Image: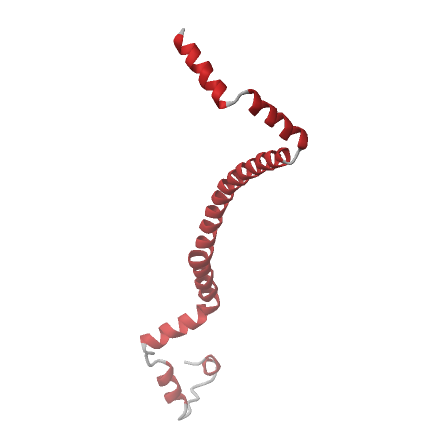
Length: 127
């Protein structure tokens, strides 16, 4: 019975009976389920989106960042080795263009000629 009609003295109208009958008729369970889904949609839609970003977007990007950090460490070591080798090669090239260095090399080559080395080796072998 309706709350408004509770205080009235046996007043019944012809339209009151069908209204109570329709309110007491069972609602289909599927329709009730969809109402609950729609009611909680503001909660579960952001949760689903967050889960999608967390599992499909965030985790792969974090693992890729970790892999790139490891590769950066390896690359830093390789870069340092390449820079030191480059400095050594540059020093040798600068020395090759230095006239004093070239003269010293020429004198050393003249002092230790291959034929002199061959005779020194054969003399030490004869002893």
